[in-house]
Image 1 (cartoon, helix red, strand yellow):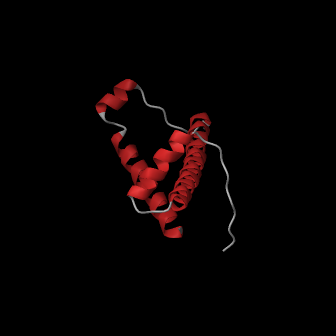
Image 2: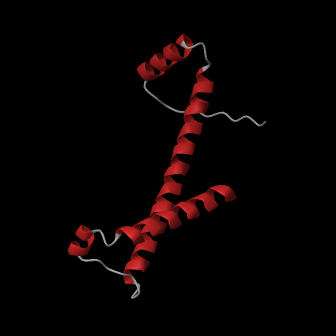
Image 3: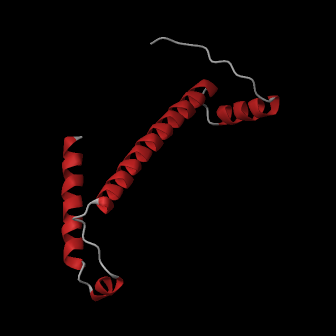
Length: 105
């Protein structure tokens, strides 16, 4: 494994407090910083993946809303429960899609 040196400027009191906490956990400061970096990278990747998924969901919803074959319900129809059968069908399709995506991973 190649090693690189990472130099940064920070306040002396921040450095001293960090080093004291690292020592209290009996771990090298460099190990903790590497973990912070890995966690930061993972969080940013997950955030980008979620944003891409959300944008896809929004795009699909807009496309469905623009589709002339989309069935729209009035408030009265919703209150009477006429939508329940189609909702159950949609929930089943989503569950099947999610299961297929999970199986493909």
